[in-house]
Image (cartoon, rainbow, N blue to C red; front, side, top):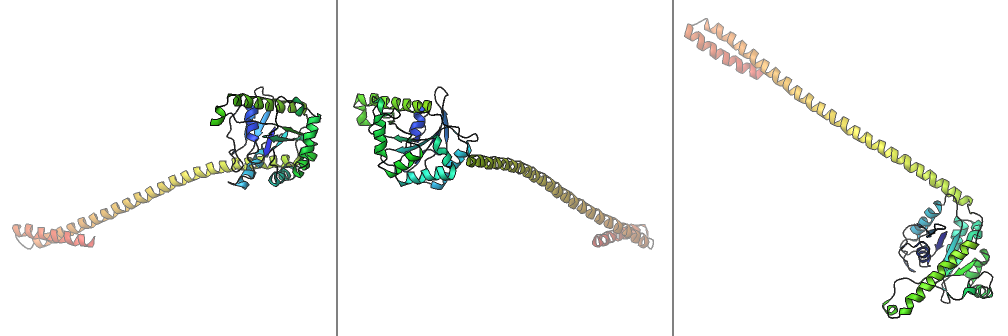
Length: 318
């Protein structure tokens, strides 16, 4: 059971009433329903979907996309659509929304599954059963009254006069209402009567299951989108693995380069030590030659000096 309508029309009030949930209620300016909600009646007989309100001043386009997302969730179609409007305020915005839903998204085939629901009906009387009986004189009079409004007349013609009225007062009472003990009891009767009216309508209304080509195509697009998201997720995981491996290999190369640099430095030092040793050896040889020219003491002294000179020369060469 899809609930569609403008922000503040009363969709969430119906949803909460039928499911026992407590979604936030909106107003005429800002929708409190940020995403579509699903809930079942206490006997699990009916499933209700509460959609975001359109014409939301926060971000109208975002709200419309959320409704499209909601429609995409109906992979197997839907059974009943409640187009919800607030009594006395069915204006051009409601009419524009109606055309957008039934011409661009659902197609006119959805008319046979739809019903107009009027909320905040000030003439709602829980004790007047004839008001809600199909084809009763009282209901015919109310339909005739509604048809005086061109927008109501337009929708009723498409829906073959399927319409009912509810009044769902909030459970929270104002300070003034709390002073009157009869208010809470009266509001509860209205809520109960509204719930029974909705259940009674659903028990009697059995249209063919709705599953138009638009929904099927949107469902295919959604499936393709989900598949691409999944594939993208896998690619992201693979990309992250490659990044980790690349960093690992890069670190290995950096370490190898650093080790090569250290090895080259050690080799360079070793070559320097070799040249020093060669110089010392050469110096000793010079010292020995010079030592042969003098006595023992002179040999040692001159040899030491020669070795020192040779070492210095070797270091300079290194």
